[in-house]
Image (cartoon, rainbow, N blue to C red):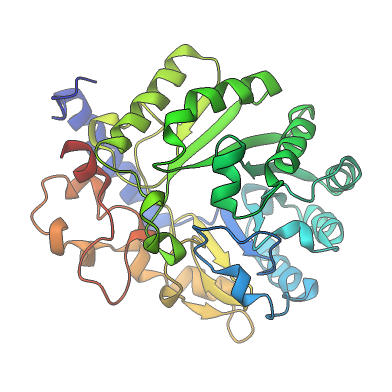
Length: 361
């Protein structure tokens, strides 16, 4: 993309209009396809950018497995479980000793299941037991070469442990596996070196994203991309995809204008509350676990998740209320719809971050 050409082509505008029709239909149907479960707030890292602030929340007890599995059983009774992916997150899920028991039961109920992990506790024995329990997908976080990864994760010797996990996972056939990298102003100069490292290990899929200014991340300047670095990141991803050496994708962070489909497989579509639901560690029913927890829709200890999914989530499915602040007069709102849900809070009258604005300015 030319550095001074950010206008959408006629073809792109038509593509966005057709995609809007698709998004509207999907929103009306709102079929549950992904269910995130925050299985624990315990964590063995203290990451600088943590949105849930797991370190200060370790005293909260994990949700009992039977409580979660009762909810998934109700879902399986009503919906086709084979069309719903259960994604276990945290905190750090591997701190739970009962993941295999939970995974085995999810498979019996008809679901596929995966997890998001920092990889610190992944060993060959643990991986084999998880695979036997039906683990079908996993994302591992690696945030640069040793110095930058350990700075972000705020833990010494974490780089080697994560590399060990990635090498183990790269050797497993029939496992959907990707590496996720939080790109920031410190590690962006070394992405080419990190890419070479991942390719050498055998990683096929690489998801890169910029850090949302929420939680701890709002307080540390180095976490934010500065002065054209978002465009630099998108150009890097586009080049990776063109070369075919590794399948790089930009995360579902926000609307990217003319970069759409250059850096990911489909146009931007925030599916929180539309295809994605979530159960937090305390039982709160949310959507994507990254959104502000004040948008909760109920709690599984008092409410039926099925009832909530089918009859609530209005604020996530009808986002006309987002047309305020800088979005009020933006010509891209018809395509963007206010950017990602995680970039809004109930007490702010503006989006926390606009990717399109960062690209064109």
